[in-house]
Length: 456
Ligand SMILES: Cc1ncc(COP(=O)(O)O)c(C=O)c1O
Image 1 (cartoon, rainbow, N blue to C red):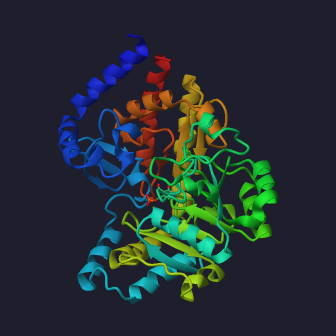
Image 2: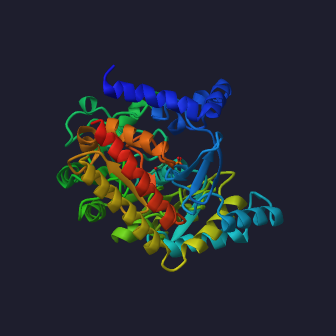
Image 3: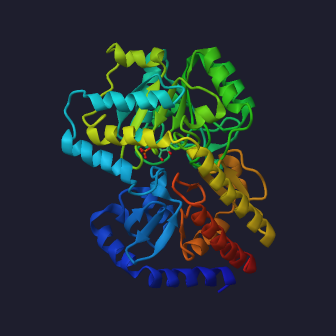
């Protein structure tokens, strides 16, 4: 057995001793829940090997597994726990609203206006908003609205982005480059079985951060394009920031050809800043989708945009429906969350803490001789084990070491720091992580990266 295989075997053995109760519970769960967990991102094939930890509870920036281990949490529910676990203000607002109002009425009510107004006030590109239940739903609506408004059907999307699981957009996430072909004009590849292949004709897939291929495609087919959908920073391939001018180019070209620009801010919304990535980068889309962060951990999403675009719903020409849309739990959570996020200086403070963490990680890795690129804006980031900067999926696939990331995840887990084991996910820093959390994480990282360096 080589030393890497020995390290692997050692971890798996340690893990079963470390988390035996999770192991037994996983076996029980797997009998009634496919894969033993409620979403595939929590399962073994997505990196939670040999089985996912089962969680007892979370509080603030910490999470505790059922074997009694407490972790500093950078997984944060895959993003929604922007205010930490069990935020007392949001929890109380939800409980109180349910007690005093109910849960859903099949008719509008005043708290819904309050929540909508606060979102409109916060996000530059949103003049009108509808609440819905998940990011996938919000994106599905954004796509159909863009087609209805423009009377066109072609959608441009980018490799490496994820926009939820609906058939229209569940394509070309982490594609095999050999199957997708030329990066300047990739083939659209469904992200899984069951997606009607006929939808291929409704999509153009491009490499992100590649201005030339975008300009070329728009020159050829811009007049057929209903919408360009993009994550304004890619958080579904680790963390990749837009090159200077790229979002501005998407904005100007879509305007030029009469297509809509959709920012999928399911992750970036309320995370880059209170007004999302569109505020941070100063580029305003026609439609915005929001979800994680919007309800401080409660399940809610939204589709919002300019009055001009949203008027298709207002005038009854487009039916956007949903039994649970804008229910009391959602609106109470959104309203309380928006208030908390308005605290002066909050984002600056937490972004600075995040930068202390990312700068510290880069320095430690550099000192122990492991090349990394730490990319992000403080409240969300990824540490790429790569010598070269990464600008899109093809470069991530080519340059980033998944193996080193797995080792890093394992070393950190054993030191009480939790994040997703897959390097194509990312690390979230909540608005309640403390200086002490960051210091302890850096201390753990010193040990973890030194251990990896010793067995390179
Ligand atoms: C950018 C983006 N869009 C859409 C979705 C889908 O959201 P949901 O999981 O709430 O359906 C996700 C989920 O991770 C996402 O990251």
